[in-house]
Length: 133
Image 1: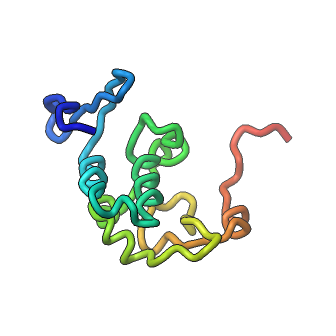
Image 2 (image 1 turned 90 degrees about the vertical axis):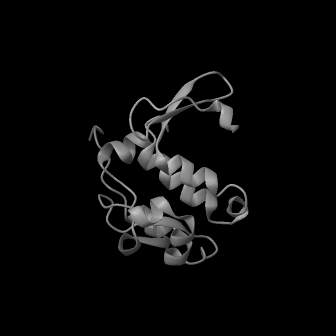
């Protein structure tokens, strides 16, 4: 995204970007941290995992936000501000595993995240809301 896609902030630290379809999206500091890593780290195997965590917790425009950020699930400052810190804390992702929060109501932070198998994640789900019995 080019720098000319930015507009003046309306409040301290609040910026808007315009996507290719002309839609405006409000973004915060997390977006610029992620954008700054695009040059070298974007090709890192864990970059997409980290970026998706940030989006679903911090971006109301993300389709998953209602299940994460809107529920109060956040990202610790260390990870929000640094991709390198996320990699250092989580280590390499083992084959066949993905990131999982041990406490589903807890934040994405070092003591609450692990690389889990699909079976572990299925066993660690929160109860579905609103289903008829």
